[in-house]
Length: 336
Image (cartoon, rainbow, N blue to C red; front, side, top):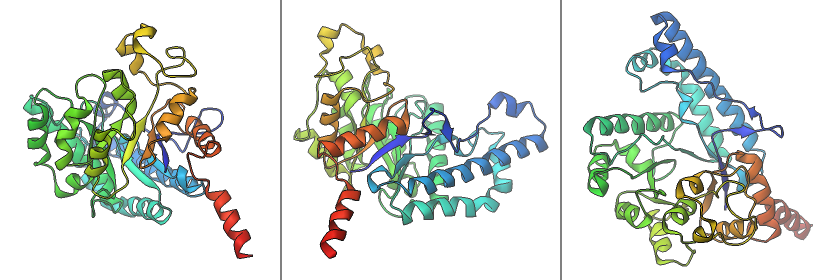
């Protein structure tokens, strides 16, 4: 089991190591052509170098901690129509920076993913929204392909939600418009408002399903268990690749610090229960998440790796996660 973190790698003070840079569309459009070019070029180089430094650090961690979601602003404003042509001018010279990131990740078994934002809605009933969603998925696909992925089924994960008024039929129609590489990498998850796990499982024949257990609890008031028949269908959708589960809990103060929270007793709106906590403070819920032994887990929590690592140590202590260091020590002793 791997435990991942999303986008930002934090030091003990809560500040980001190797941060990605970004800019705003408004600022970009206020600049003349040459300065626009310089801005996106400099930010892109910084982001690719800092991604490499982050991966280099992850490579020193125990194997279960080598999992990361890369921020979507790797190439700033790439899908903005005024910016896209600028990238064509300089991106080829940066191919080696992409390639070395992918090579390092594969050499050290670091599992990588992207998660396009909430406005990437392939199942929208608005054709303009679908066009932009397709562009956004293909942008993330380009980044992954430049790192050497998109060659085999789920060698890289690009995860989106299936919400949208066009439903599964709209999602399927959009999915079939994606490039072959994007179709190899795309996954779809349930959400807490409009698209249940049962809804998302309609897509299992197209792409893998990512189970978000917090979203499921918020929407259905149910703590789904690993032996649920729907979980077996989720696993099957990955076609032999180790599946990914998303784990988060409600914010501190919203739910008890121990035990199973009951939505009726809490008397808190679902909109408030949606928000993610800083840390994984409830051991009952931690044990629940780690009981999904067939899955790698993306930890969706505000304090990123600083929250993930205590969960990892707790999981080792509870014998829910393997301890590679202890196993290596035992193996070495047996050899001697």
